[in-house]
Image (cartoon, rainbow, N blue to C red):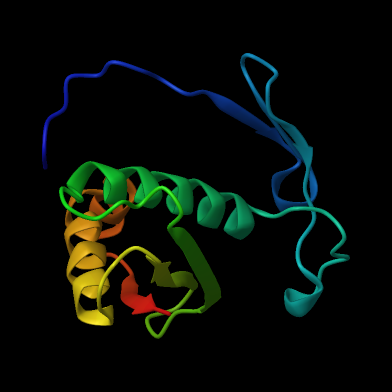
Length: 140
């Protein structure tokens, strides 16, 4: 396990599980939650999978900017699709697809190399490495 020098701590508190609410300690994020209709919930509110996808996309975009030396990535678009479902070994699990669009990249191959490099540096990607199936794909 990689040790880190902790420089920032985010704290969020949930009440009511997947059909409850979440609030950060600074109250900048306060959301009602609902299970998606696709898995038997009422839908109509955000859910943990969406929150994880949003956070990972933002982190990945930051990592992409940090690793790109020659290509401007300010207009890059990162879409993280977080999939949930029953795991083969029981219980539930996650999988993810990361779609990376870099308009300033000269080729799709160059964009893929940058996306792969960002994936190696993104702290969310590091956190799930070896734990869930992740696909990283450059797109046009």
